[in-house]
Image (cartoon, rainbow, N blue to C red; front, side, top):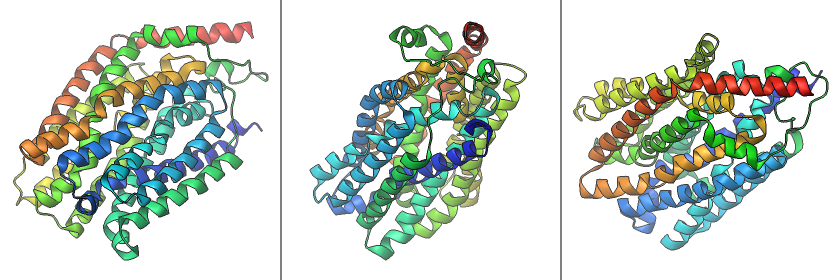
Length: 427
């Protein structure tokens, strides 16, 4: 039985889940380490924002390069390289002994942060369109779980094993181990293998990257709305990731245990929201090509409303704050898996990594500055104002952009299916 039709493809999903879980732990735990790292180097909010923006800027600049490489060469081997880079740069970050060196080494950790398009497109060649949302949702469980694991490592384990540097050495070493795992066990798949038109074909034609097909990405009207929502949509995530723990500690009076027992359930609910969003998108997609967009627009709208209600809750009303944060966590991630699946619903297989990388490039082109902007606003006012203002405006814009995509998705999806059918007949 071919690998895609056997348990092997789920083994690949497990390996990728492990990669994402540990990588996200390494990437996101720095938010929980803001206080000890800032004390080590004497940083204010603006400098802390600059530290995090540096890695985001590097990742942004490298998205087009990673996307091109993934569409030209073996994605599995490139993912192994990305994992090795992750481990190496995290080690260097732990070694840094001055603020300038920490800034430089932290920026270098952004090199591998732009490696995800290859992972998602390789999965798309193992699973067909009606399953992708659920699989992406399953994989993206790793992001909040990594956030939670990073929080545990930062708040509970780091003080026991020598501080934040020891945690960086640990996660960096795991990155190198995962690199070996991917290199040895993950197989490449022909691009487009899981498309319905080619599913039962014994011989698969080879689709190769072409600049002409790459240009077609920008002629898909749905992609323009995807790009626009991406530009706005990552702002809230970066604000919450890099500043929310300091907000809880400094402005809401939470100690380490209170933060852990408040945020751990919220993050677990968030994790479930990724899979829920992907499953809902797949379900509605069977009945209408607008299904993924409908789920996404609902998620950003309700997520924004409940975050505003949470942040404006009086400090002394911790139970109400917790309830609103749990509701925010349900809706925040609903769009994530659906956006990735939507890209693959309208783009041909040989340039999907490039399309995904372009979307991430545009996302991070604006959002890379979110930590710095947040730090500036927080220093001028407070973290409460920054967290209230930036996510509500950004998600409001996303809702508008998703409404636009509702009018274009049917045509763009039909065009892709017609193209795949024509290629199948010509094979």
